[in-house]
Image (tube, rainbow over the protein chains, first blue to last red):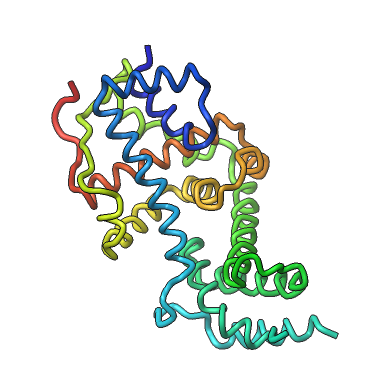
Length: 86
Length: 192
């Protein structure tokens, strides 16, 4: 019989690779009878979904953000890029 | 072809810098990473096939650069990095028989209701940043970038079992952080 600690490990692993039939079955049964593990599984799924959106937001940050690459660094990059071309 | 070094740096420089600084938290290192990214991208620009946006392509290269840095620093650390093998927190979650030590709450609302609030993302980011560095980087590498488990294991020199444990701990920590700081539903009382 799966205990809660092992069940939470399986939940996490299910986000990494497909579980075996036996693992899916015992985890499914465990979550049917254990509301706290079912809640934790929902939290793991929530976090997984949030991570994807978080990364998209990072890549699309508003252009007026106060964090900017310093001018000197930009100038250096441009001159180094130019020097790569013959 | 409208590509020019000036156009690249003015269109994408700030965005790459902000992305890098979120991950490495060091302005100088972030600026270096952005420079390396532009250099590599410029050399490889004929291979850019336009299937994704230029920004996405540059960010992909930046991520590789960030992970290279992480790998270099990782090698200099002892193998029994306490960040990797921090069992203490986990022991507080469960009793010896593997049952929850505290009652677990339900998170209210649908994920979307939370995701549309800017404040949620501030809290979420703080929770990510509160993870131990190794854990955070591996978690980002695997969960955000979808890099294959085998590849991450090889890069880090850890077994897949250790990798799964690391990702598990990152999830558990993020979950308690959100319990406490966003849902305000810290576990209380008895579990059964």
